[in-house]
Length: 236
Image: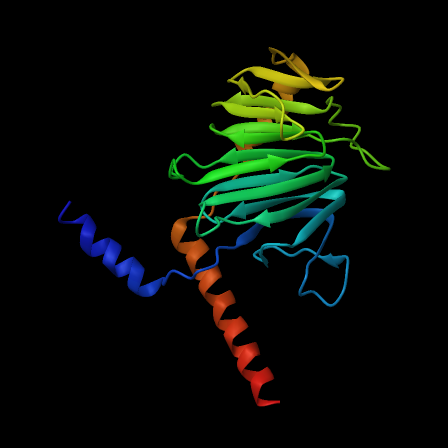
């Protein structure tokens, strides 16, 4: 323990903690765009190492991307998926919320994530509260859909446990490893994970988590840029 304390003090010196956590784009392939409350344009191309904040929306067209939500989790948008960052480690609740409108999300909660840091994935028909590590959330398809990822609306769990609630007010269904819940009308139907979904879970093997220090460096540089821009605006 005596060896760990100086290291933590050193890290806190070089990587100060800011009030607002961010998401970092860790992977982009193909056509993916973003927009947000502070962006002047809509549909700007998403870039690797780009910082996203609460309220930003990401749309994958003929492409995919991965977003690291602070050091809490990594999510991958499949093709033709639209999602927004509703909250990022809210200072009071320590909760992050991602809203997926259409398409599919692959979610990997990092194993070093503190238990009190909660993550909810909200779709038009259900809420998935993360209690485990790896799962897929399938929302309704939009005008276009990924023909290589044909999954019914629901939640598909590879590892851990996910608490699924229909329409934010229904009865909670705990879904464990190698299980799935799909919508059957207005209710959830739980069963063993189908072989097709299990095969798609292999994508999690490709996920790469940003190291804590790399995340903090990107976040710190972003904060410096923001402060500089605000200072320049104040002089004009």
